[in-house]
Length: 552
Ligand code: GLC
Image (cartoon, rainbow, N blue to C red; front, side, top):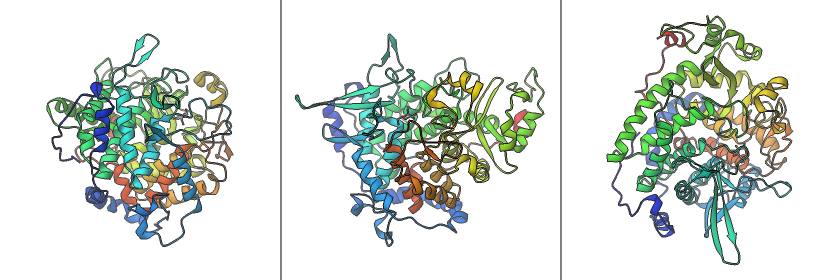
């Protein structure tokens, strides 16, 4: 999946890029949305193979395309039925969340919740939260806001970033930013948070990855190659990659992270090599590979990416994968094996396998566990990491099918009454005290600790379509439709089956709204999947069988 890369003249580097130059970039003629269809053809024909089974039960969903629905490319022709009433509400709410900078839309705020006494930073544009908004706009044929966002955040990346007296890496992307309007001077200023204001002072590792993934989505959706090809975007990608491809003391190709550096942005025992980051890392590397120019500066990165992808996919597919067979193997592991012939390479103690896994693991099905590092296996299921693994083809087709089997088999636990559990199961009592540091927001089955997050609906839907099982997505969407609007689009739900609106959940949480719209549009027109999914790379040899790969 390579784009024909043409030469684009560059005016300046990102550090010199002033607003004049930025506006020039913004004005570049937009390629007609129609181009996207041909751009998608290859992946679509491949996609159709996977869809055959699921499409038997496939019913298109209908929606009006929001206020600009008239020029919506995908839906207008097929709108012969009434759309779900929630869709119009969702578009209205999504547009209300738009943030403007010097007259142009540059993002969406995290939550538009006037009833909430504490705004904290929910009035900011979060990079990760904007992704489903961006996809909704792209799918609706409104790419300009996405382009504005990509360029503005790129400008923020160029800032010098400091936490107290410590200088952060050049490539770091902000977790969020906001626009300060000065009504007297009539000026707008951007303020960004790279972790120096965030609760706990965590820098978001996922932001840069999402940025690259979004750049590819924009390129794929519009057919406009010129944005990704600009020296600014190429440099932005190189800076992000420099941060995560640098050599250190690592013995694994996975990326070492601090707790709270992704969507789960509070202490939750998600440090070391969390699946949430590894899957995004893999996807961002694949997207960068497709977008990087093979010029003097890009070539070296391309080589490093290829090598890393190779090692990373092997490592993840072998050591993070858990199914019934593998669980049984670990259960019977010997420990303290020395030398390269060791079967139990990470010295995982069978006694550390939590009781719930034995119950939870179906005979058919499997998933990527939360974390693997020396003598430590976090057996928890994480929704985002597993869905991204499917979308990026980090999961082999067999593994992707097994993840979907697991979701079907464990529907009550993972979906319950509101899609989708952020992780499973919740930690409680002593473990909660130790792992979260007694975090009152992350009590069992709440928030990041086994809470149910409507935003994850779009990831589930995309994974369902990729694996040819749209009927599962339809079931999940039906559940969401029975509550989301009525409850005021909450940020998350609490409880073992996700029945209660979250204790501290914001209302009108933008990514709950956008996630729903994206899920609807994906089901209506599965060709949209091309912008957020990658086909399997045949060159990355799949691991043959778990048991044989373990020893080789
Ligand atoms: C919470 C979530 C985080 C999200 C932010 C804004 O901090 O944990 O993932 O980006 O809210 O919605």
